[in-house]
Image 1 (cartoon, one colour):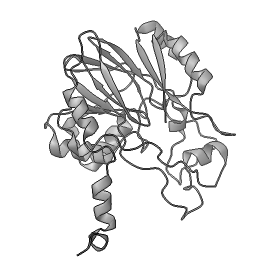
Image 2 (cartoon, helix red, strand yellow):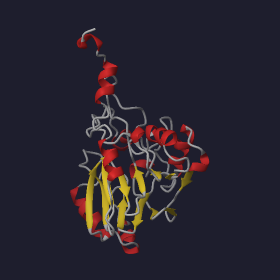
Image 3 (cartoon, rainbow, N blue to C red):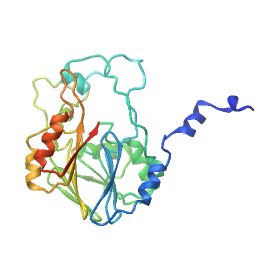
Image 4 (tube, rainbow, N blue to C red):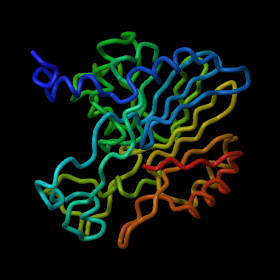
Length: 282
C-alpha cells in the first residue's frame, strides 16, 4: 500500500503529537541544578515545573488540554464565569496557543503534583492518569478542596491527596511548600449552570484557590495561579522572602477583570518585594 493511502488521521496525530515529544522530559531529567539555585520550566498557561538543587521535582498547574476547537456552538455555556462577569453570550475565541511541550506519559521522576484551583486549564485528568500509571505510588496530589474533590472523582486515592488552605505548609523532600491566600475573584463566580449568583455573597476563596510559595535551598518561588491584583500581596511580601514571583498576565477586554495587566504585574512585584517579577500568559 502506498504511503498516501496508508497514512490516516490517527497515524498523523500519533507521529506529530505531542509536538515536542519527550525532549523537555529528557532535559528536565538531565538537568543538574547548581547549588544555591533552582530550575524551572514553563509548561504553558500557568504551568510550571520546579526542580531543586537536591533533585526534587514538582509540577504546578500542568495542563494538557485544549481551548476552543470548533465554531459549532457560537454561544458560551450557560452560567460560564465570563458570562456571569460581563453579561456576554457569544463564544470566547480562546484557543490554546502554546504547544504541548511536556509529555505527561513520559514523566518518570516527580515528587508532587499541585494545582492552584479547579479550572480546567490548571488541573488535568491526563496528568493525574499518567502519574498514577507510571510514577511512584506515593506521589502526593496537593491542592485546595475543590481540586482534591476533582482528583478523587477521577480515581486518585483519597490517601494520595493533601488538602491545603492558606497557612498550611507541606514538606516535599528539600522543598517547603507554603499555601497562601489567593485573589482569583473569577473562581468565586465559577458556579454550576443552574446556580444563581445575583444577590448572593460568594463563598470563601480558601476552598477554591490558593497561591504557593516554594522555599528551596537555592531560593524561593511565588506562584500566584490566576490571582488578580490585590493589596494583600504586600502582606505576603512582608511575611516572606520572595526571590522570584510569577503572575497571571493578560490584557482584559471591556467588562472583564480576569488577568493582571502590565501595570498590575509591576505593582505585584513591588508589593511582594521580589527580586524578579515574571509574567506568564494565561
